[in-house]
Length: 326
Image (cartoon, rainbow, N blue to C red):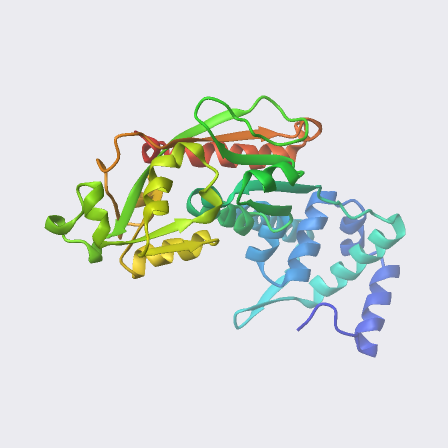
């Protein structure tokens, strides 16, 4: 049964009767804690305790505990299950009507969540932060979050966001965001190496010198062309008269390496992210490195939701610190 379907005449009469009676339901509703009232109303609206907990950003056990105490206080059963569907009992319907009427009388405002804009380097978003951001949204359905993928220094300069995670040199965060930010924070150093799919490369046939690359198709992500520290790799690609694929999609580049026997330049952690890929160290004399940086917009630094995102990012990099050992 939907909690928003039109009421029949008998149910409407029951609701009106409940409004004018001295039933304990009304007495409890009048003095009910606002948080508990919200727990009840959101559970009724969602028809699912798990979804209600996500919407409220609380633990399901915490939600159920408060609702159980409410039922104990009322000495009534407010919810029941019809098969796997959660519905309101008759007492629950009456209590729901009383709370809705009181909410309208008090004109309680809807609690608006601030919009948090998170801008992240495309490869970092895909490889490192994506899974934890999904987990955050599974726990907190009330968040207002805009996620922006950065694929170049130009997009970094053009963006305005509350939290920014980008790639730059290991010595300096520049070029960084164009707006006022907190002191940039180092998150992790990244070593870049050529990678190939294991299934296309037996140990005895893997390239061990630059000359050996001539027998393999190379794939180049075009958004990394301006990265000066990748010059050794760019020079090899530019010398090719054949056997080169140049792409503007990071995800497609990864797919080409996984499925087309290509060799491409990837962060050294990629073998941990995808067990089917393996690095090819020792091909270049020069080290190819970048640094992951994070900064917060100065005017957003005091926002609780912004701090939640910053803490998530820090924890993610801390938990994966072994990925970045060079």
